[in-house]
Image (cartoon, rainbow, N blue to C red; front, side, top):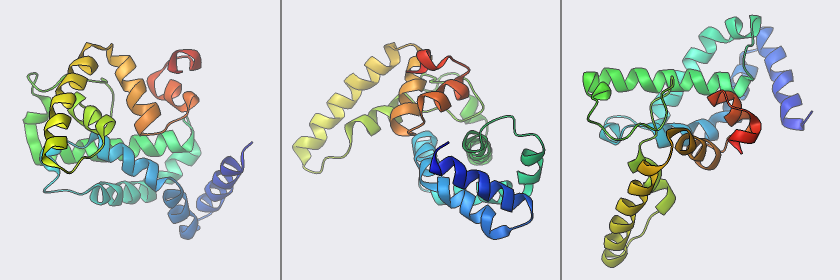
Length: 188
């Protein structure tokens, strides 16, 4: 068992005993991974209205409310459960701010049909490219982004989701396999 796993187990034990500091520490332990997930999956139309910190705050409140229920029946590893809680909060905020537009079939290519908002080919391509500042670099980046989006759109949806989970959300092979219902070999 890794030190991280031992620490999480101890924090879960303390949180189950009512230690609110342990609840905060549990969330803090995973906050950066959750932030990456939210940044990747947040619809770009929401960027002016919401910040990933808003989603994380909502997720922390939900963690505080539902941790006892999780501890009574932990069907997933803690981080994957917390990731699902955060994803549901992000999805709810998408529905609240975008309404039925989120379900528009004409939107970008779906990367995963799960409980979390999808990582679009646009957001995935932008993550792959990084950021450039000069006008010529920006023009080259825009052209390259279109080519990458086309390549991503040509990939199998599960393969795109594995790419998003492994390389941008930094889930392990085991976590990716469990999140997608695959074998570890398929996730790697």
